[in-house]
Length: 134
View (cartoon, rainbow, N blue to C red):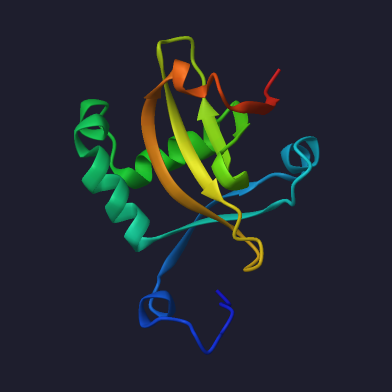
């Protein structure tokens, strides 16, 4: 994957290893007025998800990558997150939802997963719903 090279780039950024985990489809991107692009995650964020949410994931029998794939392949709502991030949500009629938060790394040509977690539905009350599957 190409990465923009700058003089101020840190060694950590140069050494990031990305994995493609999905794509924001053209249909959904058009509906939310965003660019369709691939979704990537780097190893640091996989580690973050595991370290922060290990017990939650274990309780439902998922590894971080299984969890990401389950959400990316089945999300049915998109919300506007903080600082123009996107929140992909699998809404399923129970008190909790599963969430992936995406950073708009479109200067690099892709969306980047920041985190994935289980959260109470009420935490989305203050977020703007951009799209939902009918």
